[in-house]
Length: 163
Length: 163
Image 1 (cartoon, chains in turn brown, red):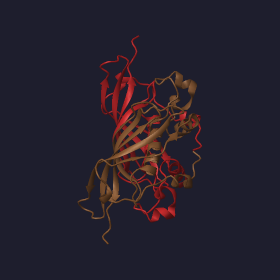
Image 2 (cartoon, one colour):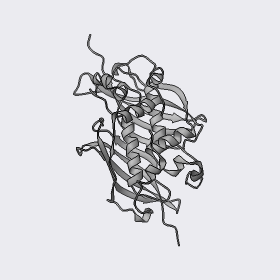
Image 3 (cartoon, rainbow over the protein chains, first blue to last red):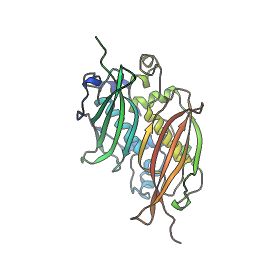
Image 4 (tube, chains in turn orange, blue):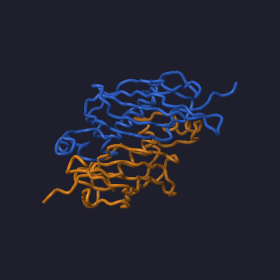
Protein backbone atom coordinates (compact mmCIF):
# COMPACT_ATOMS: atom_id res chain seq x y z
CA UNK A 1 0.00 0.00 0.00
CA UNK A 2 3.02 2.22 0.54
CA UNK A 3 1.28 5.35 1.80
CA UNK A 4 2.68 7.48 4.56
CA UNK A 5 0.64 9.21 7.15
CA UNK A 6 1.96 12.69 6.46
CA UNK A 7 1.10 12.44 2.78
CA UNK A 8 -2.50 11.95 3.74
CA UNK A 9 -2.72 14.52 6.44
CA UNK A 10 -1.49 17.10 3.97
CA UNK A 11 -4.64 16.57 1.91
CA UNK A 12 -7.09 17.26 4.72
CA UNK A 13 -8.50 20.72 4.28
CA UNK A 14 -11.40 22.93 5.23
CA UNK A 15 -12.20 24.57 8.52
CA UNK A 16 -13.31 22.51 11.50
CA UNK A 17 -17.08 22.54 11.83
CA UNK A 18 -19.63 21.60 14.49
CA UNK A 19 -23.19 20.36 14.13
CA UNK A 20 -24.44 23.96 14.11
CA UNK A 21 -22.45 24.64 10.93
CA UNK A 22 -24.04 21.81 8.94
CA UNK A 23 -27.14 22.37 6.83
CA UNK A 24 -29.15 20.20 4.48
CA UNK A 25 -27.87 20.49 0.92
CA UNK A 26 -24.28 21.43 1.74
CA UNK A 27 -21.89 19.70 -0.65
CA UNK A 28 -18.27 18.69 -0.42
CA UNK A 29 -15.91 17.61 -3.20
CA UNK A 30 -12.33 16.44 -3.04
CA UNK A 31 -9.31 15.54 -5.09
CA UNK A 32 -9.00 12.75 -7.64
CA UNK A 33 -7.21 9.47 -7.18
CA UNK A 34 -6.13 7.05 -9.92
CA UNK A 35 -6.46 3.32 -9.40
CA UNK A 36 -3.97 1.07 -11.19
CA UNK A 37 -3.84 -2.69 -11.71
CA UNK A 38 -1.17 -3.23 -9.06
CA UNK A 39 -3.25 -1.50 -6.39
CA UNK A 40 -6.34 -3.47 -7.44
CA UNK A 41 -4.45 -6.75 -7.11
CA UNK A 42 -2.80 -5.81 -3.81
CA UNK A 43 -6.11 -4.96 -2.17
CA UNK A 44 -7.74 -8.09 -3.57
CA UNK A 45 -4.89 -10.29 -2.36
CA UNK A 46 -5.49 -9.07 1.17
CA UNK A 47 -9.26 -8.72 1.28
CA UNK A 48 -11.11 -10.07 -1.77
CA UNK A 49 -9.04 -12.85 -3.33
CA UNK A 50 -11.09 -13.70 -6.40
CA UNK A 51 -9.75 -14.29 -9.95
CA UNK A 52 -11.45 -11.22 -11.48
CA UNK A 53 -9.66 -8.96 -8.96
CA UNK A 54 -6.28 -10.72 -9.07
CA UNK A 55 -5.27 -11.66 -12.61
CA UNK A 56 -6.02 -10.17 -16.04
CA UNK A 57 -6.11 -13.52 -17.83
CA UNK A 58 -8.32 -15.25 -15.28
CA UNK A 59 -10.58 -12.19 -15.24
CA UNK A 60 -11.29 -12.58 -18.96
CA UNK A 61 -13.11 -15.83 -18.25
CA UNK A 62 -15.17 -14.26 -15.45
CA UNK A 63 -18.57 -12.58 -15.43
CA UNK A 64 -16.75 -9.23 -15.65
CA UNK A 65 -14.63 -10.19 -18.70
CA UNK A 66 -11.70 -8.11 -17.42
CA UNK A 67 -9.81 -7.15 -14.29
CA UNK A 68 -12.01 -5.05 -12.00
CA UNK A 69 -11.46 -3.55 -8.55
CA UNK A 70 -13.08 -5.09 -5.51
CA UNK A 71 -16.13 -3.07 -4.56
CA UNK A 72 -14.65 -2.86 -1.06
CA UNK A 73 -11.49 -1.33 -2.52
CA UNK A 74 -13.61 1.36 -4.18
CA UNK A 75 -15.38 1.82 -0.86
CA UNK A 76 -12.11 2.12 1.08
CA UNK A 77 -10.80 4.72 -1.40
CA UNK A 78 -14.10 6.55 -1.10
CA UNK A 79 -13.59 6.70 2.67
CA UNK A 80 -10.11 8.12 2.17
CA UNK A 81 -11.36 10.84 -0.14
CA UNK A 82 -14.25 11.55 2.22
CA UNK A 83 -11.91 11.90 5.23
CA UNK A 84 -9.90 14.39 3.19
CA UNK A 85 -12.80 16.36 1.73
CA UNK A 86 -15.99 15.85 3.76
CA UNK A 87 -17.15 17.79 6.79
CA UNK A 88 -14.16 18.13 9.12
CA UNK A 89 -14.83 18.03 12.87
CA UNK A 90 -12.60 18.06 15.94
CA UNK A 91 -13.56 14.41 16.52
CA UNK A 92 -12.73 13.28 12.98
CA UNK A 93 -15.07 11.57 10.56
CA UNK A 94 -16.72 8.81 12.57
CA UNK A 95 -19.27 6.72 10.69
CA UNK A 96 -21.94 4.95 12.72
CA UNK A 97 -23.17 2.90 9.79
CA UNK A 98 -23.83 2.79 6.07
CA UNK A 99 -26.91 2.05 3.99
CA UNK A 100 -27.82 1.66 0.36
CA UNK A 101 -24.27 0.92 -0.74
CA UNK A 102 -24.30 0.16 -4.47
CA UNK A 103 -21.71 -0.31 -7.20
CA UNK A 104 -23.56 0.60 -10.42
CA UNK A 105 -20.44 0.09 -12.59
CA UNK A 106 -17.13 -1.71 -12.07
CA UNK A 107 -13.90 0.21 -11.52
CA UNK A 108 -11.12 -0.80 -13.92
CA UNK A 109 -7.36 -0.11 -14.00
CA UNK A 110 -6.62 3.50 -14.88
CA UNK A 111 -9.91 4.86 -13.60
CA UNK A 112 -9.67 8.27 -11.93
CA UNK A 113 -12.09 8.49 -9.02
CA UNK A 114 -13.48 11.47 -7.14
CA UNK A 115 -16.00 11.70 -4.32
CA UNK A 116 -18.82 14.12 -3.64
CA UNK A 117 -20.87 14.20 -0.46
CA UNK A 118 -24.03 16.06 0.46
CA UNK A 119 -25.70 16.66 3.82
CA UNK A 120 -29.12 14.95 3.78
CA UNK A 121 -30.17 15.71 7.36
CA UNK A 122 -28.85 16.95 10.70
CA UNK A 123 -29.97 15.54 14.06
CA UNK A 124 -28.97 16.90 17.48
CA UNK A 125 -28.79 14.07 20.02
CA UNK A 126 -31.75 13.98 22.37
CA UNK A 127 -29.70 12.41 25.16
CA UNK A 128 -26.20 13.94 24.88
CA UNK A 129 -25.82 17.72 24.71
CA UNK A 130 -22.32 17.61 23.19
CA UNK A 131 -23.16 15.78 19.96
CA UNK A 132 -25.47 14.90 17.12
CA UNK A 133 -25.47 13.05 13.84
CA UNK A 134 -25.64 13.96 10.17
CA UNK A 135 -26.65 11.79 7.27
CA UNK A 136 -24.49 12.14 4.18
CA UNK A 137 -25.14 10.97 0.65
CA UNK A 138 -21.82 9.94 -0.88
CA UNK A 139 -21.24 9.48 -4.62
CA UNK A 140 -18.04 8.30 -6.30
CA UNK A 141 -17.59 8.95 -10.02
CA UNK A 142 -14.96 8.01 -12.58
CA UNK A 143 -13.29 10.21 -15.21
CA UNK A 144 -16.25 9.64 -17.56
CA UNK A 145 -18.63 11.05 -14.91
CA UNK A 146 -20.15 7.60 -14.45
CA UNK A 147 -21.25 6.73 -10.94
CA UNK A 148 -19.25 3.76 -9.60
CA UNK A 149 -20.39 3.85 -5.95
CA UNK A 150 -23.15 5.40 -3.88
CA UNK A 151 -23.96 5.11 -0.20
CA UNK A 152 -25.69 6.89 2.62
CA UNK A 153 -23.80 7.13 5.89
CA UNK A 154 -24.56 8.49 9.34
CA UNK A 155 -21.68 10.32 10.99
CA UNK A 156 -21.16 11.49 14.56
CA UNK A 157 -20.65 15.26 14.88
CA UNK A 158 -19.77 17.32 17.99
CA UNK A 159 -21.87 20.36 18.93
CA UNK A 160 -20.42 23.77 19.63
CA UNK A 161 -19.13 24.06 23.19
CA UNK A 162 -20.75 26.75 25.37
CA UNK A 163 -18.34 29.68 25.81
CA UNK B 1 -0.25 -5.99 2.88
CA UNK B 2 2.01 -8.96 2.20
CA UNK B 3 -0.52 -11.65 1.49
CA UNK B 4 0.01 -14.03 -1.37
CA UNK B 5 -2.73 -15.24 -3.58
CA UNK B 6 -2.10 -18.92 -3.02
CA UNK B 7 -2.33 -18.53 0.74
CA UNK B 8 -5.84 -17.30 0.29
CA UNK B 9 -7.00 -19.78 -2.28
CA UNK B 10 -6.02 -22.56 0.08
CA UNK B 11 -8.65 -21.36 2.55
CA UNK B 12 -11.57 -21.48 0.12
CA UNK B 13 -13.62 -24.55 0.83
CA UNK B 14 -17.04 -26.09 0.31
CA UNK B 15 -18.57 -27.48 -2.83
CA UNK B 16 -19.63 -25.20 -5.66
CA UNK B 17 -23.34 -24.42 -5.45
CA UNK B 18 -25.96 -22.93 -7.75
CA UNK B 19 -29.09 -20.96 -6.91
CA UNK B 20 -31.06 -24.20 -6.65
CA UNK B 21 -28.84 -25.35 -3.78
CA UNK B 22 -29.50 -22.28 -1.64
CA UNK B 23 -32.32 -22.22 0.90
CA UNK B 24 -33.46 -19.70 3.48
CA UNK B 25 -31.81 -20.29 6.83
CA UNK B 26 -28.65 -21.96 5.53
CA UNK B 27 -25.63 -20.81 7.52
CA UNK B 28 -21.94 -20.58 6.78
CA UNK B 29 -19.04 -20.07 9.18
CA UNK B 30 -15.35 -19.70 8.51
CA UNK B 31 -11.94 -19.46 10.09
CA UNK B 32 -10.70 -16.83 12.52
CA UNK B 33 -8.34 -14.00 11.78
CA UNK B 34 -6.40 -11.90 14.29
CA UNK B 35 -6.00 -8.17 13.76
CA UNK B 36 -2.87 -6.52 15.14
CA UNK B 37 -1.89 -2.87 15.59
CA UNK B 38 0.44 -2.87 12.58
CA UNK B 39 -2.33 -4.09 10.25
CA UNK B 40 -4.76 -1.52 11.70
CA UNK B 41 -2.27 1.31 11.07
CA UNK B 42 -1.35 0.07 7.57
CA UNK B 43 -4.97 -0.03 6.43
CA UNK B 44 -5.68 3.35 8.00
CA UNK B 45 -2.64 4.92 6.38
CA UNK B 46 -3.98 3.91 2.99
CA UNK B 47 -7.72 4.35 3.42
CA UNK B 48 -8.79 6.02 6.68
CA UNK B 49 -5.98 8.28 7.88
CA UNK B 50 -7.35 9.49 11.20
CA UNK B 51 -5.43 9.73 14.51
CA UNK B 52 -7.50 7.06 16.32
CA UNK B 53 -6.60 4.53 13.61
CA UNK B 54 -2.94 5.53 13.21
CA UNK B 55 -1.27 6.17 16.54
CA UNK B 56 -1.81 4.83 20.08
CA UNK B 57 -0.95 8.08 21.82
CA UNK B 58 -3.08 10.29 19.58
CA UNK B 59 -5.91 7.76 19.90
CA UNK B 60 -6.00 8.25 23.68
CA UNK B 61 -7.17 11.82 23.19
CA UNK B 62 -9.89 10.76 20.73
CA UNK B 63 -13.55 9.82 21.22
CA UNK B 64 -12.46 6.16 21.22
CA UNK B 65 -9.78 6.63 23.91
CA UNK B 66 -7.56 3.99 22.27
CA UNK B 67 -6.35 2.70 18.91
CA UNK B 68 -9.26 1.14 16.99
CA UNK B 69 -9.52 -0.38 13.54
CA UNK B 70 -11.21 1.51 10.71
CA UNK B 71 -14.71 0.17 10.24
CA UNK B 72 -13.81 -0.29 6.57
CA UNK B 73 -10.89 -2.47 7.60
CA UNK B 74 -13.26 -4.66 9.58
CA UNK B 75 -15.54 -4.69 6.54
CA UNK B 76 -12.71 -5.66 4.18
CA UNK B 77 -11.64 -8.51 6.48
CA UNK B 78 -15.26 -9.59 6.68
CA UNK B 79 -15.32 -9.79 2.88
CA UNK B 80 -12.19 -11.92 2.88
CA UNK B 81 -13.64 -14.36 5.41
CA UNK B 82 -16.93 -14.41 3.49
CA UNK B 83 -15.16 -15.19 0.19
CA UNK B 84 -13.46 -18.09 1.96
CA UNK B 85 -16.46 -19.42 3.85
CA UNK B 86 -19.71 -18.22 2.27
CA UNK B 87 -21.70 -19.84 -0.52
CA UNK B 88 -19.20 -20.75 -3.25
CA UNK B 89 -20.35 -20.46 -6.87
CA UNK B 90 -18.63 -20.92 -10.23
CA UNK B 91 -18.89 -17.14 -10.72
CA UNK B 92 -17.35 -16.28 -7.36
CA UNK B 93 -18.91 -14.13 -4.65
CA UNK B 94 -20.21 -11.06 -6.45
CA UNK B 95 -21.96 -8.50 -4.28
CA UNK B 96 -24.45 -6.18 -5.92
CA UNK B 97 -24.82 -3.97 -2.87
CA UNK B 98 -24.90 -3.78 0.90
CA UNK B 99 -27.43 -2.44 3.38
CA UNK B 100 -27.71 -1.93 7.10
CA UNK B 101 -23.97 -1.94 7.68
CA UNK B 102 -23.31 -1.27 11.36
CA UNK B 103 -20.32 -1.40 13.68
CA UNK B 104 -21.84 -1.92 17.15
CA UNK B 105 -18.41 -2.13 18.85
CA UNK B 106 -14.90 -1.05 17.84
CA UNK B 107 -12.25 -3.61 16.87
CA UNK B 108 -9.02 -3.23 18.84
CA UNK B 109 -5.52 -4.69 18.38
CA UNK B 110 -5.43 -8.39 19.20
CA UNK B 111 -9.07 -9.02 18.43
CA UNK B 112 -9.81 -12.37 16.80
CA UNK B 113 -12.60 -12.04 14.26
CA UNK B 114 -14.85 -14.62 12.65
CA UNK B 115 -17.73 -14.30 10.22
CA UNK B 116 -21.05 -16.06 9.97
CA UNK B 117 -23.50 -15.66 7.11
CA UNK B 118 -27.08 -16.79 6.67
CA UNK B 119 -29.30 -16.98 3.59
CA UNK B 120 -32.24 -14.59 4.10
CA UNK B 121 -33.94 -15.04 0.72
CA UNK B 122 -33.38 -16.49 -2.77
CA UNK B 123 -34.64 -14.82 -5.96
CA UNK B 124 -34.44 -16.31 -9.47
CA UNK B 125 -34.02 -13.55 -12.05
CA UNK B 126 -37.21 -12.79 -13.96
CA UNK B 127 -35.27 -11.66 -17.05
CA UNK B 128 -32.17 -13.89 -17.24
CA UNK B 129 -32.57 -17.67 -17.06
CA UNK B 130 -28.96 -18.32 -16.04
CA UNK B 131 -28.93 -16.40 -12.77
CA UNK B 132 -30.58 -15.11 -9.65
CA UNK B 133 -29.74 -13.34 -6.41
CA UNK B 134 -29.58 -14.26 -2.75
CA UNK B 135 -29.69 -11.98 0.23
CA UNK B 136 -27.24 -12.81 3.00
CA UNK B 137 -27.12 -11.59 6.57
CA UNK B 138 -23.47 -11.30 7.60
CA UNK B 139 -22.29 -11.02 11.21
CA UNK B 140 -18.71 -10.56 12.40
CA UNK B 141 -17.88 -11.35 16.03
CA UNK B 142 -14.78 -11.02 18.19
CA UNK B 143 -13.25 -13.55 20.57
CA UNK B 144 -15.67 -12.42 23.32
CA UNK B 145 -18.63 -13.26 21.06
CA UNK B 146 -19.45 -9.56 20.78
CA UNK B 147 -20.83 -8.43 17.43
CA UNK B 148 -18.46 -5.92 15.79
CA UNK B 149 -20.09 -5.71 12.34
CA UNK B 150 -23.38 -6.62 10.70
CA UNK B 151 -24.62 -6.11 7.16
CA UNK B 152 -27.06 -7.45 4.64
CA UNK B 153 -25.76 -8.02 1.14
CA UNK B 154 -27.27 -9.15 -2.15
CA UNK B 155 -25.08 -11.52 -4.17
CA UNK B 156 -25.34 -12.72 -7.76
CA UNK B 157 -25.69 -16.52 -8.08
CA UNK B 158 -25.70 -18.65 -11.26
CA UNK B 159 -28.51 -21.15 -11.86
CA UNK B 160 -27.91 -24.77 -12.71
CA UNK B 161 -27.23 -25.28 -16.40
CA UNK B 162 -29.67 -27.56 -18.28
CA UNK B 163 -28.03 -30.94 -19.01
